[in-house]
Length: 113
Image 1: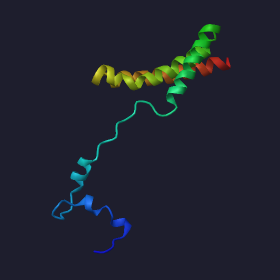
Image 2: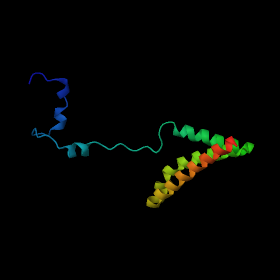
Image 3: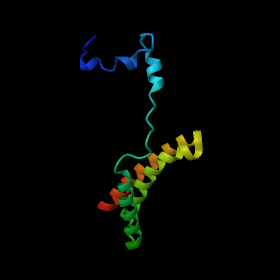
Image 4: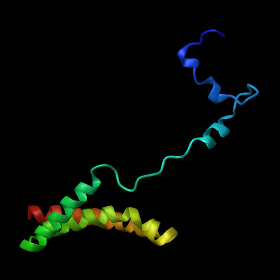
């Protein structure tokens, strides 16, 4: 064929040397799976801000700042628990999530009292 449309330009990658079309399983096997990231973009910066709030709360003795910083850092630490403890890390991460949410509500309650 003297010409081909641009949207058919990748047909050679989808067939083998005999012109037989590859199955979807073979095409998926060729593609490398994307590596999951531990933290999303901007979460590290927010953890630094939470650490600064925790430090400021400890320095000045403001309980709501201490609880807010601790709650956020505990919430973010839950992601590494399955890597550290294996299968038992999943329930530990769930407990940490619940505890951090309750601690955050406590910090907001103390802020308005």
